[in-house]
Length: 117
Image (tube, rainbow, N blue to C red):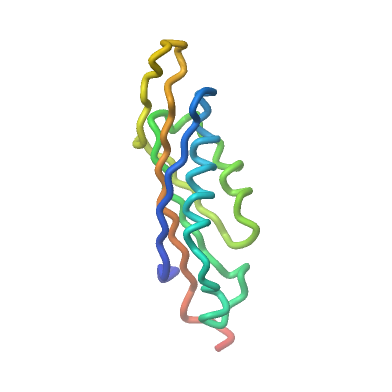
């Protein structure tokens, strides 16, 4: 079981298209941009050893493509959990597509007990 060493939070939106995946992807990017720590190197691990858990909250979880979110990460083992959350804000023009707000929590950890140590 990985020990969590870092948690970042992000928020993203889809203003006009009603795209839950795009809002979630922007939230992931927002969380990643907050982090400039070279965590793997700090603990003597390779970046590919990272175990990433991505928790996503949107009003329609079934409309999020988890593979698109996994593709944002250049390395590491990524687990995506999508659940009901976030916020849909009705647009004043009443075009049927709300403004979608997605929230994410991104946790990064490593197996601290390595077999090669």
